[in-house]
Length: 362
Image 1 (cartoon, rainbow, N blue to C red):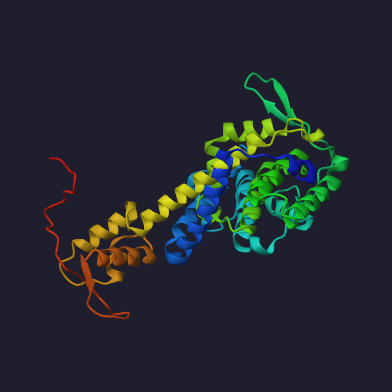
Image 2: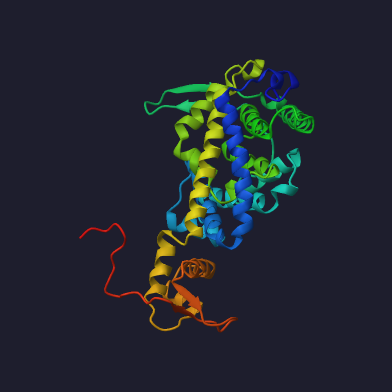
């Protein structure tokens, strides 16, 4: 659409700071592959947390809130929704799961976009998966009851044509390498929101499409760290930069810089958090890792993985194995055999009366 024409893309210029952001994101993508290749078994906890946070934050940005205990049941156990808010959460859950499972096989096409929107509303009384039939200005509502039109999207009768043009322009820019993928993805998101093709659910759809398109270029951090949570935690900047970059969009004279800077900053934050969390997991640290370490190191008799797992409810076997491997590497424990009946033994039994750590002061 307007941000993806060859003429508009040719006018884009980036300063040294922006180019550094693009380089850093490329480096993080390389590290991401390494982490996943080295430690695939320890990432399941991150995936579960990200799924819950993404579903919660993306809906909460639109004012949809459910109780925390119900949220986890809905997202992790596929519980049946019991209210309108839960219906909306369950729809996002399903659409998000589809993207995580099949994004690489889902083209950015009319069929995919309508399918995802239909999933958002699959539990709702009103059906989804259809372009808007009436105009839908983006309105800001103030506590005193006053309103302000933030943006007037594409008219309803032009929506189908605008969406087809967006997809065509994006495909051409991608195939002709007119810009870096990390430029094209946020431009698609901005144009989608400026078209505002659905009567409702456009914000949630934009965030789902962000994940889908990033997956196409192997930027998969959203599987492990919730981008939606990061957007929510910086929602003032999220909305302000979108508004700033949409001014003049209809005339193709808009300044994409505010939105690009925000988008890249959010993605960098996600990758930094991913690196930090994976590093914590790999070292067997953090609340869960510390529980396993303490349990293993206090044993005076040979012990099995199952025994540690039973003593640490709520901690996965993969995490237990990971921590035991770390303790072995540190020379603190050693295996007494191999196979399913193998046991572990403390090389240097810990003093059970001593609980101090390096740096503790009495």
